[in-house]
Amino acid sequence: MEKSIIPYGRQCISETDIRAVVDVLRSDWLTQGPAIEQFEKAVAEYCGAKYAVAVNSATSALHIACLAAGLGAGDMLWTSPNTFVASANCGLYCGAGVDFVDIDSRTYNLNVAELEKKLEIALKSGRVPKIVIPVHFAGQSCEMDKIGDLSRKYGFSVIEDASHAIGGKYLGAPIGGCQFSDMTVFSFHPVKIITTGEGGMVLTNSEDLHERLIRLRSHGITRNPQLMEGESHGPWYYQQIELGFNYRITDIQAALGLSQMSCLDAFVARRHELATSYNEALCELPITIPFQHKDVYSAFHLYVIRLNLGQLAMSHREVFDVLRSKGILVNLHYIPIHLQPYYRKLGFRQETFPEAEKYYGEAITLPVYPSMTEDDQDKVIKALRELFIAGKR
Ligand SMILES: *Cc1c(COP(=O)(O)O)cnc(C)c1O
Image 1: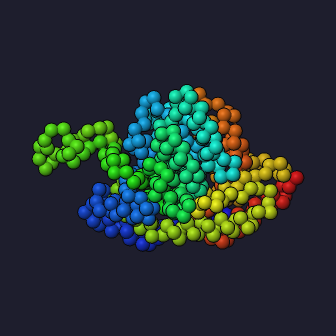
Image 2: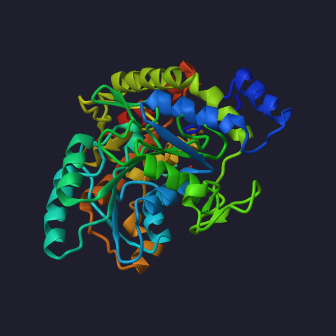
Image 3: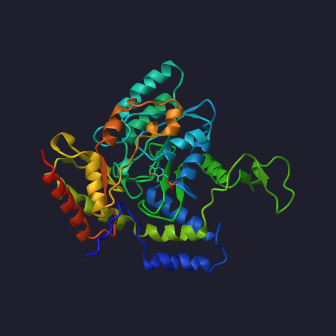
């Protein structure tokens, strides 16, 4: 029998999605046409936010969100070490310094008690961050009410990196509504919850931030006469009033995103079914299954287990190698950012964020995606059972 490959995540594209893209290809606009605004409106309405700005990636979204919040040289940005490098790099793009707050041992999200401690110390040395980026790891929201309280007390802006979390809820409200933050960022990379190929979005309830984000997305150019210096020269006229970028998304991508929105709830529901099956099948094994916070409905972008290595005769690496050799493409989210060579050169050292480092030595991301079949999942479960029963101490 040929060995089938089970990836850790993959997109789910329907015939309806394909038709939506083809319709744009036959239309007058490939970029900056009507599909972008429709996509933005659909996501903003779904999330309960006033404004949404679609861009070509979540990385771009994080960059312009930081700029819109006023981040610059001499400022600090704090985030979790357990995230993709983009959550921290956006601070460096703006010329700011970056630091991390260690993770909660249960949720693997930024630890709010640690955040508070670090803020107290930072206040004394006058180094309170300008921006904190909580990352909703694996799709599970951070404790946003507490982070919102701290942001008011210490005067920093909050940008939620919700790249994993569209379709999830916090205290009953959709992620992206920005009740406890200034802005929220989504990613539409193919492994994420919904996709546009490449793409991202910033949501906000602030009219000022919205206007700034729109401008930064497209070269810092405005066509609004009220924002111009002097008089307009005529109907062709625009002015560049700050330094922006070309971070625009295409209508082709936005049409795909808009079409995918109609499947969002079904995708997340299917991810929950798969997570529940894993929970039931794996709870007997020497592993820790994902903790689910009572205030949160996770989008389950990732299903992460932790090995209880004390009860195993095998190493973390060996478990990976065995599963991968069977075509089960388990992954590891994430290598703590402060241990990346680039960040070490900025002065970060091992053992600075012990919880994130310990987690890195034990975590495994199992495959979860909406089109995953029961057979696929049974293969993963069977492989894990065999491995742990064979490898028991
Ligand atoms: C995927 C991801 C990003 C970057 O998303 P792109 O759309 O690929 O730029 C940022 N942060 C987190 C947490 C991610 O998972």
